[in-house]
Length: 485
Image 1: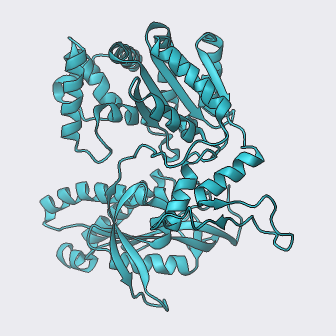
Image 2: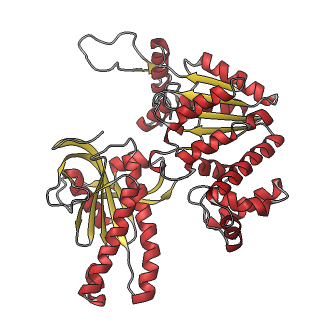
Image 3: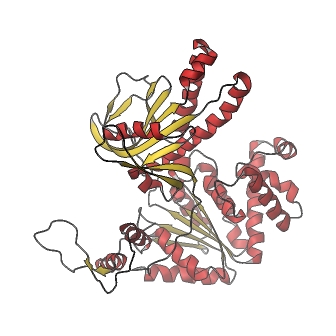
């Protein structure tokens, strides 16, 4: 959704600063330091735009960016932190070259804060991203940037609440910030958190029919019948929760591997497939590349006699840097040849894994998948005819996405393998049970006429658990039947 002039919006503000620019200027002189700072700003801006942010201002050795305007995304806080981490990685590589050439050490510090601002066109900007945001959110972001250590990233409380499931955070305590009447909680970003399998804390509510359909599908998979299952629905309707229930029921009999699409990676080839392969290898987003490479070679060697021949295709698929010999094997093929052999190798991998135990691939948030991922998934549909392989395709009911076309293609080509579930909102009784169970209370059947707000939940002291926080209640609500977690 595009912003209008002078509109109030919730955004994530990122402010980055080059550390020691005065010292650098003294060492290099005005001309060289000017070009150096410009190159640093270019590197920062490139990573910000890569994750959908807007560079609002460039002021000397400082960059000011907003995530959420002029176009808003559902994960702007996550995008801001990812951009900050990408900036630090890119600057670290560039800093090695600069230090080798001039003996100058480069580093940046970054502050991120989320909150309301008034967004308007920036008439004084450089013209490339002519937007600006004004408000206390921006001022706090600037103060957080001053608190960050060299090469560090510091975020405020609202940002922390929105990204703590995705990143490792270190509490820095409440800090006195200029212009603030009370201390402000601050947190340092220390790394990316590997995704965790949804822990089921509450029973599934209101999805008996859908659960029965999927259970029959799983029973057929155990008997050796491959399946393609599309699970569709609007955001938050319960797609993830339904699949989590199935995983918990069949984890001893079926090998589940999950990959997830993300909105900011639609231009990254094979992102959900990379995620899926990494889960198969047992490595995370922060695992060093050397370990990922060794795990891939070891796993392929267990399954294939010609592991050395197919290794370059898998390594390239998941974005590893190829060794010279492996790169030479791929260089001999054109783009179509590389794609064809990659798809064949991936299909064969699924067949060999399924020979050991029935295999179920879960592709979450497939509406965010890039074109290459959709092409690969279409290419592996025939595997369900050959082996006990299940393909779970989870996506939103928006027909413009490639995931919808993939589901239609599967329906046309493999009607005997294809199943489809479109999740609808829960009935009123089920919704009331869901809310009451999540809040450990009783939801009244009617709410007071004098109160136009949402119904309150009557707490039951006999059911209250000691030590249950409001965040725990929110978490349990997310894992209940009406949530996609």
